[in-house]
Amino acid sequence: MVVSFDRVNHDRLMAKIAARISDKRMLKLIRTFLTAGVLEDGLVNPVDEGTPQGGPLSPLLSNIVLDEFDRELERRALRFARYADDSNIYVRSKRAGERVMESLKRFLMTKLKLKVNEQKSAVARPWERKFLGFSFTRGLAPKRRIAPKAVDRFKQRVRELTSRTRGVSIERMAGDLTRYLRGWLGYFGKCQTPSVLESLGQWLRRRLRSAIWKQWKRGSKRFDELRQRGVKRDLAAKTAGSGHGPWRLADSPGLHIALPNAYFDSLGIPRLTVRS
Image 1: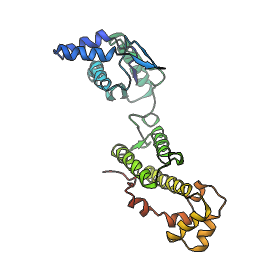
Image 2: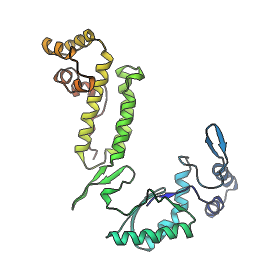
Image 3: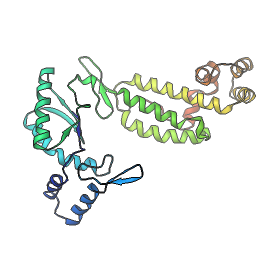
Image 4: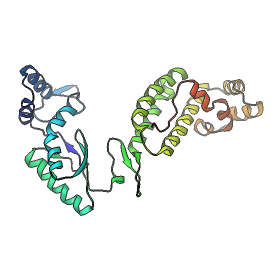
C-alpha cells in the first residue's frame, strides 16, 4: 500500500511535531520548509498542504505522520514493512488482503486525513509487487531479487555514463561508472539472485566494448588497436573491416581478446557480484 502526501494538513502535522519538539525556532524552521512553495516553470507556487516531494525533511516528516499508522498495524498483529510513505502489508489470502486494504484506507483517510494513492495500491502476490527496488522470486523458499524497473533504471544510467556524446576518455568514463557502480552495488548487491547480477555484468562489459569501439572510429585506428592488444592480423582485419554495428561487434571474438574482463578490472570497474 502506498500513501500519497499531497494532502497532509500542515496544522495537524505541526501539532504532532510540537508534541515532540519544544524548540520554537526549530518549529518555525520546519513550518517555513513546508510552506516554502514549489518551483514550476520558473514560478514559485505557494503550498498550504503536503510535504515537498524529494525534500531532505520529507522522509522524517512522513515517519512522524505515519507513526500512528505503524501502531495501528501492530495493534492488529499485521506483518508489514514500511519506508517513508511506501508500505507492504502481508496477509494469508487475497480475500484477507482486500478486507485489510479497505479497512486501512478508511483509517488513513478518516483518522489521519491522508489520501491513498489508488494507482499504486493493490492486493497482489509478493512476487508481483516491488518494495524499495526489490521484489521476490516464487516458490517455497522465495529469494530477494532486483525489481525489473530497478534493472531498467540501472541500464539507463549506464547508457548515460557510456554515451559517445559525452566526449570523454575511457579513463574518465570508467571513473564515473565506478563511482556509480559502487553505490549501486552497496544497495542492490545484497540481492539473492546472482544470475541477474552476472547477466547485468555481461551486458555492462559489452556496453563498454561498444563504447570503446565507437571511440576508435576509423578502420585503420581500429585495426592498429586490435593488433596492439594481441589480436592476430587476420582476425583484426576481419573485425576492423566488418560492416556490423558496434553492439554486435562488442560480442565478437576480436573485441573479447582486445578488451578482456581483466582490462576493465585494471580500470577499477567493479564486478557485479552478490555481496555477503
